[in-house]
Image 1 (tube, rainbow, N blue to C red):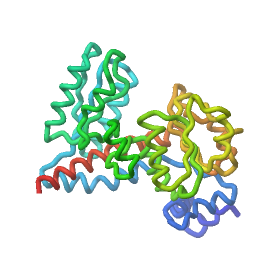
Image 2 (image 1 turned 90 degrees about the horizontal axis):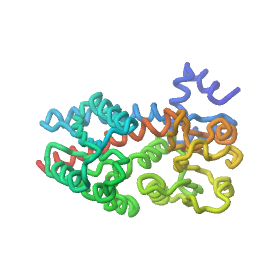
Image 3 (image 1 turned 180 degrees about the vertical axis):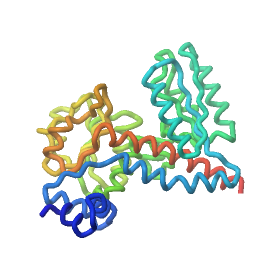
Length: 317
């Protein structure tokens, strides 16, 4: 009898069986893998759990006269960026977080954008600042990012924040790397001593998630566009982090049997950076796209915003 079916019989349902599997620190997850089952790492479930934990914290802040506030800045009229900003605003509203949307024209200069960010830094009613990426090409995006106060850098985009994350005491790591770690923790996936291969080295994904895994005592290999014989490195991995930004780039034939795949990609056609079907055949656990890392990323942004608001409560005490 399959382990999941056996537990379902004992506990009464498939749903309770899955809950039993993922919420026990004794790592029943890995026993499931040993039975040749596949575990789909459900990001919607993880995000719901995060947001459920935030609700009483938001209520507590509200009772004390503080409404957590996330300011989102959109420069230009990129349709995808507009969609992302709207999704984040809706997520804030459902949780009782105020979303202040600032839409600037595509002709905005670096100096104008920096001034807007500086004003938000000084606004005590704003607890987090998110500059939607990408900005128009004529703007110095890095300069704009670096203008964000470290206390309000809830998206983890400043070099100051990245440095703190790498050294192990960062308050707000970049949201997608934080989401990957949240999924790992929710499902009790072992990290210590495991070989993690991160494919991609962007400053807000590949590099910070490599640092977070290293801080958890994983042995980390970070691969990039200059890596020779990439498939060989991927084939050695216990954990594969797909963060390359290319649709279905990671092939199932590269995957070591039993590896865990966390796909942070989202590409046209609703596909990730890993070739899902072929990777699923080899992996013991995998995040779907959509419904994997993405929902948890937004929940991490909400979590960081609430934490930033809580810090101001402490400062006012």
